[in-house]
Image 1 (tube, helix red, strand yellow):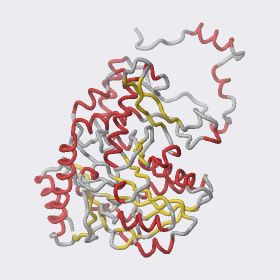
Image 2 (image 1 turned 180 degrees about the horizontal axis):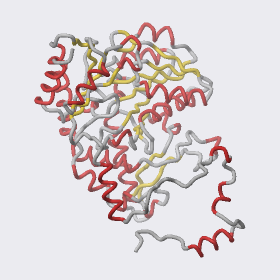
Image 3 (image 1 turned 45 degrees about the vertical axis):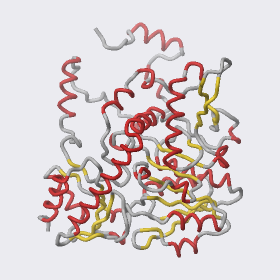
Image 4 (image 1 turned 120 degrees about the vertical axis):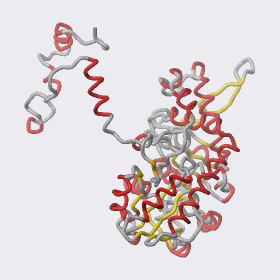
Length: 448
């Protein structure tokens, strides 16, 4: 008994004859001979289903995960608690197997879920319109850059702060290069965007200014002042935000942001070795028709019943290529659904509690570690749940020793910033306990 339906030899021969070839190998004649393996794969002897299951369990048992380790690693992906009900909803077949809600008459459940998701993103960001189906925070930021050039026609400059995540800036480089845009970077001072240098860099050709808050170092930027600087040259102001922080920080839209984007992983999505996750994207009503992806709207049917439809579909597979705002062609709605369930469960009070606990525990950890010999805070400004610590030993050596105690240490900022060698970025979420923070401090104290 097979757990799948294999083709018989006769069926394979019939299929090959139907397309006019003699062997399966002829399907791959376009592959050059010099790169072919020219031998059978070394897969060993065939195994039964039971034997394969045992083998896979043996291999997976070698993996190490956060059920055994305590993580203080953030840098864009965070170990937040995910209520069990999130997975229970996601694994329902009507959500798990659905792709794109093209036919509203049979997709009302998914359309409503996306509508509710958009509504909550608008409430968090302080903006009018949010979309769905952004791949991740990095590509959402790049799409914001492209959108800004469409809004500010004939402007070809994008200005980004170096306090924005290095990974996001790498994606920006790729997008801007392909779109023939000029990407300018502004350095930081004391862990935040250097306002004086920003004034020197922005010009009448600047389409958008992109900053992150809390920034990559965990520091809080002065969004209102940065927004004024961007608007002084009539550029759009784009903010990359941590959605958890928006439960206690002022919404960027209220401080002058024209577009707010970010990585949504912290909202009910596991870290999952880096994905899949989703990006969120919100903007003003004025710029709504330039937004990439999909926008679900509320309507009524012929009988006056509440219903939902895809109000805007600005992708090239829906409209003429030259009129498309983006070529995003996948659907991240399952990940966005996780965020919807998470935010609904938490509510305003619950999300604020997650943010407050992350804030207070991070500050406790920073104070505790900064008192140790050989460690000091890299920056003095206010921060949310991440902070940078200067160390005397190399960060890689420290992290290697921490792993021996089943502690995942911080991110080595020296990998991306030459002026921050021997500087570790630590993240503390609501999941961390006082005992875990104290254990980290005690272990750091013993590393010389």
